Structures are given as C-alpha cells and as structure tokens.
Amino acid sequence: MSPDLWMLLAFAGLLIAGVPVAFSLGLSGAVGIVAGLSPSMLATLGTNTYNSVAKYPLIAIPLFILTGLIFERAGVAARLVRFAQALIGPRHGGLALVAVLVCMIMGGMSGSGPADAAAVAMVMLPSMTRAGYPRPFSATLIAASASTAILIPPSVALILYSIVVPGVDLRALFAAGLFPGMLAGAALLVPAWWLARRYRWEAPEDAERPPLGESFRQAIPALFAPVLILGGLRSGLFTPTEAAVVAVTYGVVVGLWLTRELGWRDLWELFGEAAVISGVVMLIIALAGIFAWAGTTLGTFRHLAEWVIGLSDNGTLLLVLIMLAVLVAGMLFDAISIYLILMPILIPVMQHFDWNPVWFGILLAMNIAIGQFTPPVAVNLMVTTEVARVRLEQTVGWAMVFVVAMASALALVAIFPGIALWLPEVLGYNV
Image (cartoon, rainbow, N blue to C red; front, side):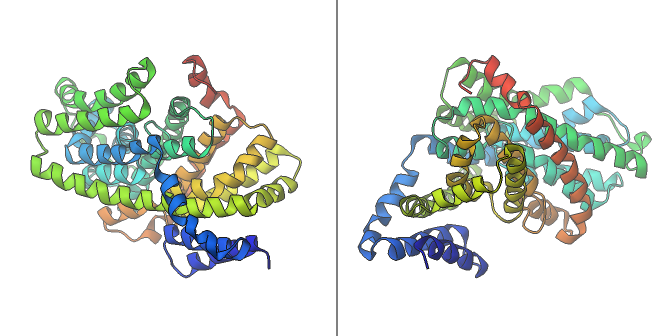
C-alpha cells in the first residue's frame, strides 16, 4: 500500500475513532512520514509545527477572537438590538429582521460565527420567545445569521485563507466578502419575514418601539467599530494585523468607559478565555503543518488534485462538485480545519481552471458558513440551541429552509463574480 494511502487512511481512521482534528492531522502526517520517507525524518516534526504558526498575519486571529469576546461582554449586542428595533419598528417579523441585522453588524466586530451567535442569542431569544416565535426557529435563524461573520470583515477564516493561498491580498478578501455577506443576510431575511407573516408571529400592536434618537446615541460606539476597522484598512493607516490590535483597544475603551459594563476583573477573565480559544486554533494550525509537509513531500496533494481535475473537463461542473464537497465538510469540521485540509488539494485545481483566488475564497467561505448551521455538527447551532434550551434535532426543518436561502445567495455569487470582485477592484486592491 502506498504511503499516500497510509496517511489518508490513518487520518480517516483517527477521525472515525473520535480523535480531535488537530491530533488526527499531526498523527496521520507522522504515519505518512514513516511509511513514505524514513523514521529518522520524524525529527522534522518540531520544525514543521513551528513554521506553521511562525507567521506574522496569524497574530490577528487571537486578537480578533479577543475583540469578539470583549464586545460580547461589553453589552454592545443589547444596544444594537434596541437601535435596530427603533429602525424597523413594530411589524410582523420585526424581531427576526432585527436578529439578522444585529448578527451582521456583530460579525463586523468579531469575525467569528460562534461568538456572534452566543452574543445575539443571549439578547434576542427571550424577546423572540415572548413575541410568539418558536424557540427552535429563533435559535436556527440566529445561528444562520451569525454565519455571515465568516464573510463580513474582519473574518478569521479569510485571514487563514490569505495565509494558505500564496499571493492573495487580505485587504482584497475583506472587501470581497462585504457584499456577499450582505447578500447572504438578505437571503435569510426573506424566508424569516415570510414565515413570521404566515404564522402571525409577533403581533405589531403588542410591540414597543424604542425612541430612535436615544437608541442611536447608545449604539454609536458599536456602529463605529466596523467603520474604524475597515476605514483604517482602506486608508492604509494600519495593516490587517494592526487593525486587530486597534479593534481590541477600542473594545476595551468601549467596555470600560463608554458602556461601563466591563470591569478590569472581567478583562482579565476574557484574556484567559481568548487564550484558551486561540490555543485550540493555533494547535490545529501547528499540527496541520505536519500533515501539509508530509502530503506535499509525498506528492499526496498533487495526486489528489490530479484526480479531481480528471473527474471532468467542465470547470462549472467541477466547481459545483467542489462546493458540494465543501458543504459536507462544513457540516463536520470547523472552517480552519477545512482550509488546512482541502486548500493544498484545491489550489492546483483553482490554478488549472484559472479561477480567481479571491472569488474562489469567498465561495468557499459562503459554503462553510452554510455548514456552520447545518446538522449534524453545526457549531453555531450548537451554541444557540444551548441558549434556547432546545434539542438540535428540533431545528433540522428550519435549518433546511435557511440552507436553501443562503445557497441561493451562493449561486448568485458563483454566477456573477462581480458581486464579490467589484468592491476590491474599485478600491484598487490586487484581485
């Protein structure tokens, strides 16, 4: 049996046995090294793990994770909800629209779907339940809306994509994700509004409309965060990594002195929580370095890419097959693992068919976003169902409705690449 097959079988076997993805990647890479090279080459494990994380842009990931935690604890979500309610007013489906809009704005601060889902669910679920929305529906809608955080900058997943795919400008990726992220959110609004009207959830006469001026004043610090991050990137005032530092600093200022819902003791706890989450992410990246080095050295990724290319000469058909495969992967793995496992195989395919790497990266992100709220794993849905205290299987029907809605947005971006590429081209980024 070839070393390639040994490595792939070891990876699949470890996953089936329930071994965490990070260790499955590292151990299967070691199996490939022993089977295809030499046991003495195991001495390269330390170098490979270090080289995988010793990259300057990766500094942004733990910082944006910390940013999301700080804004979540600083009471920003509640202020955004109040402002959105004041804008939309009492109507059937009003709270559903508020949930989607707030998730999109929060995504522009945290870059993380699960963090976004947790923050919004804590605020919105009680109100939606009182207004007559079924809790499984509310939990699914918030989980689906929070998945737009993977598209709307700053996105942790897009940061990693820019590192894995050589020559891709992260600023172009951030700009390219903005309109597809908004399109995905709009696609979710349509069935949410229609269902609310059909089942007459949330009677308008029973709802209160917060005063617009007061709610806007309270929401200004939250609304300014995406403007600060994206405006600084566009003006060249700071790099994406420096933007993460600015975002953390701004979040601390907002929490300590503007909303005053964050104390110094809370800040210390958040540092610890962010360190734990970042440690898990960095462990996956580090151990994936062993898998990547073994797969590249043995030619495993090249063989798999040649096999994928050989499936069809029709680039459109192959793109559809890849999207379906990524969708299935998104149901089982997190975005970081998917990028690290699949991109070494997909990069040669992308180059063979001359697909734009920025556009292709956005399509992958949209597909992974759908997986974040599609059972059986559905990381966002796990968060919201825990808050709503409902079983995951109760959300499957609603999840399928929103899968179809977001898949429609994905199809539009695939058919019309300009939806993603227009903004980075206008801003003068390299696409």
